[in-house]
Structures are given as C-alpha cells and as structure tokens.
Amino acid sequence: MQIKGIARETLDFILQVSKSTYPLEFAGLLQAKDGIITDILILPGTESSEVSATLRLFMMPNISAVGSVHSHPGSVIRPSKADLRLFSKTGSHHIIAGHPYGPGNWKCFNGRGEEISLDVLDVEIEDEELL
Image (tube, rainbow, N blue to C red):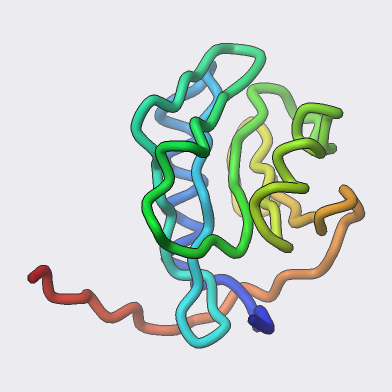
C-alpha cells in the first residue's frame, strides 16, 4: 500500500500517549486506510520499561500493519539495533517519538532505518461501527 501520510489526529494521539507513559516507552503498530495512517494497534502483552518496549507480535490479530510506532524517553530520535529488528518485521513506515513529545519531536523511518518524509494530513477520521 502506498502511504500518503499520517492523520494529524493520529500523530497527536501518538505524542499524547508517549508523554503520558513517560519515562516508559510506548509501542504499537500502525494501520492505514486509503493510504493514510489513521490507527494505532496496541498489542496485548506489550512490555514497557525506561529503555525498551517489547511488542508480542505473536499476539497480533489477523490484520495488516504498515509499520510501527514507539517512543524514546530521551531526545535522541534514531533507531537502535533492536528497533531495526522490529522494523524488518512490521511494515514500511516506522515512527519514533522523542522526549518532550512536542509537534517536532518525531521522525519516520523506512525498514532500513533511513529517515523518510511523512506528511501530516488534516483529514477527518471516520469511526467504524463495531459489529
């Protein structure tokens, strides 16, 4: 799927959750609708600490993810070796949010850990009805 960008509301959610879980790391998977990242999936069994967050990928339901998201309690916004291992398993777009989790404290990376551009889009996210 070609990713056009991320919904501003979704990015705001990422930054708010990152700030509220600080100093622990927050982690989740990114989902997209019509090429726009709109949802964050938080997997059961995710473990967070001040130095890492571990996603239990075996807990992932039968859905597709376009990438991952996690926070760094420090201001360094670069993928670690552990991040790169996760990136290789979870899609093409990976967001890292860094402390203090403001509008300019995040970056997007491809699966190789290279910084890539991700537009922030002002779109309305439609709520899906639960069955």
